[in-house]
Length: 352
Image (cartoon, rainbow, N blue to C red; front, side):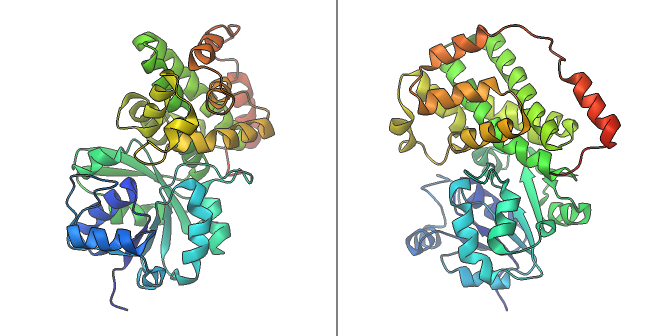
């Protein structure tokens, strides 16, 4: 075996960016969805369709052959859109080295099963979930690809795994922290995209900074409510995967979820917008699963509910935001007592 010891599965913007980052210190396989994509990247040294204007080092090895993953005995990174992750893992699973650490950088929840991405990988590949870590945080691919400073968190139930992955991927301008709360980190990554759609709509309607700040704050509150109910650590939602990623995704025009919200504010439908986005707006594919998970745990998520109505029921975003503003006022810390009681009863949060 003489191929790269690290591989990235998925040649979207984020997968290509991570391959570029890894290739600065060692060769990396970039597994593409088609031979045509792999050939185009190999010929041009760029992935112009997903990461325009960014040169890739010669140590990025594009391919569409999943058998090349046999050589990736140290680390395999999954960067496939959430809706296609299970099918991709089922395809590449037979070629995964039993020695390799596995890392999910996918932000979403699976429709139907409501599973987090690490659990999808474990089930589809037939591997223990303890082999899988998750990366999340404020990581807009175009900025990381330009070597602008960024931070993220690597989460795994086994801190040793998280630390190994962090040591492999960390760079001077890509600072990585570790966290044992993989449940909370993955829920943050999935649900913040839903709030970002609402934030884009608020910007599109000219709601102003005060209105947007209130929306983000209440969005973080409902994200945290779901996390607590599922067994996550609430402090995770105040960290890079929660508040950090929420600020970046809700405030940047580089965010596809934010752009989706802006387009909805123009009166366009999700069906019209979907094909025109330069990539995947994961929030649109996650919102129904997030609401189903909230129903399972008895948690209210009013912002997510209005996003669903705007996307799939034809409700105007103007009416959605007006209805959110018309909701009855409540105690801002209404859930605090329940959280404290939960910690006193359980000692500390644990994975679901």
